Image 1 (tube, rainbow, N blue to C red):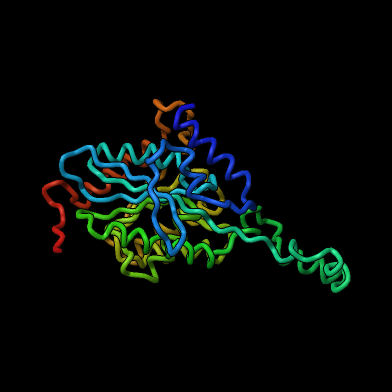
Image 2 (cartoon, rainbow, N blue to C red):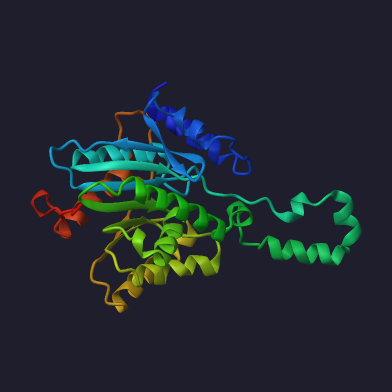
Length: 305
């Protein structure tokens, strides 16, 4: 089976099992690649997988970090791999960093049946259920915790920052969906993690207060942001698309650009020679954005050791 099909299969299997605790995320990801292609990144005592793809030019522009995640709302490994190859062709060293988004089992599910029936009346049980599961919520809302996600991603980003500290050139980070929202919150609290630019693809979180947080985080950020919006991606992301643009404009954010990617391009193919149309647009938009920022081979930043 070709690598692209393996990556797609891995993403589908993991996304269908959000409540399963993966005994070894590093091994799971490694199975989608050839032996030796996945390297270990130590996060405390845990090995986290990373995949490095070298620039296909004599003088790299810098490092592009692509954050992937098993949920379909984020960039999958297959999509991240396609995007990485396109960026490598344009002079970027790329690090694909899969993130294992923490999921929580609700306390109600962990309670013994006897305790649930004995200690709570029917009205109390109904009230608790109404609080835990909102009518407009989805399965993600019930099992995700934003604080847990930001804590876990913070550890991973700091480990990546240490791993790449000797790399010269620009630093670019790309993330989609819930992972993009989580990333913005982490770096807002930790300036040492600020990239030279961030590419946010349809950032959202399936909870109202957290979802609106991304609007201010983008507007108040001190680094350039390319805001790519996948048209028709989901209601959570779509509800802040225009607000993100207006807020950035009102905040006089100089280096901000929003691009809408048509929904009819949100398709994929398991054939390795066919590049996903929307990933091709993401790559082209990203390269255009970096050139707009003046990032050319003769303008590379100098790193003093």
